Image (cartoon, rainbow, N blue to C red; front, side):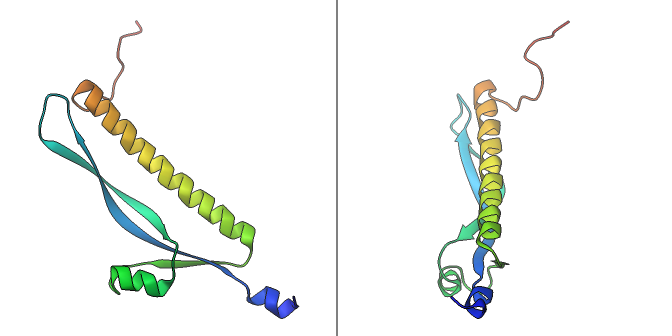
Length: 111
């Protein structure tokens, strides 16, 4: 592989933001509730397929990296952040369904 071929190779990731609804129902209620969360997602196909799927009005970002380790680090960071956001929403839902309301204090007094 020549130096020109190495210089020309880049790593690209297409990302876009999408609103996601997490649905849950409190104990003893029939009404479904939702928690909205904005997640940054990775599009794993071509830009042409993205536009075909989402239309040309959906905002996206093309992240370009010169080195594979930068590319891999970016993917890891984005996936970790997304996992953390999902875990936070799941915890919030678990707290609400466990107590039947939003709980944000101590369970007992340490005094």
